[in-house]
Length: 384
Image (cartoon, rainbow, N blue to C red; front, side, top):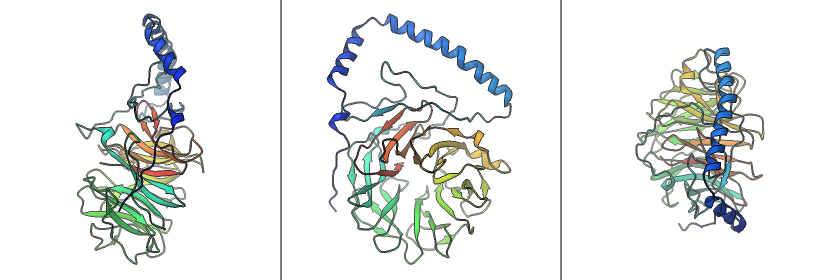
């Protein structure tokens, strides 16, 4: 199937000539004033920030080290001839605070910007599946069905995409190749099926289904056979996601009145609460080392991204909101997904009055917009 190419850049996103000239003039100046300025900023920052952290530690001796961040992210527009900034901002832009929040890199060698992100693109009046490089380049439309195609994610080897589609009437689970060909339908006459995810060993699919009336979590073989219901809660269990080792499944549930994050064993046993009174929106993802979960929560049209330790599931009732780490501040941010090295998260944001795909570095909070389209882009998932 031929797919459409569409631009991910606009000419007005390029730097104006006078800005480039100004940068070049600054580069010719002596570095001594800059070094002195940096030294002063470091000294002032130390005097202001360290006492506050010490006071907070003294007041909360049992704190987990996770806390809210209220800094506004710095957004760098994407450009095809510009290297991504990584964790260091361009010259002249102040760094955001780097907080103590260590991650284990699961992939020793990872060419981050050569990987792919799959996402939903609302084109020509319907939701379709699109694919791009992790730097925002090479945006491609993979599906073009009259019904809604959404909830895409990758197979563990990154060679197939699994998604939910309404193309045959009700929502069923499908897979396809990375070029948008060889579609295979996995579910039939099983209610409305959403949010599929393939297990790390490639043998199972976990998904949400309305079969029986309520939304609950199901699992089936990779070929669609032997569907088994894992949860049986009338309040609705949604958006399941496998742990990196395939032994556990995270999901969102309103069984205690407010949507919270839960973890259970892969067979549906040992359900445990991860967050308490978080007010989740749904989609979540595991860090590659399995130590953290990212999710989104907040009031309607004002969602933000958070991190929580999976160890919170070992607490009697999970962790309260003050034990979560907040990554964004404003913009209505949703649907987070970790990069394979665990250093970045891709997500959708309405900060430009139209949902677009972004990435954010979990430590520096540097944020980069990847799509600049005149239609919504959302539900991104990073390729393993």
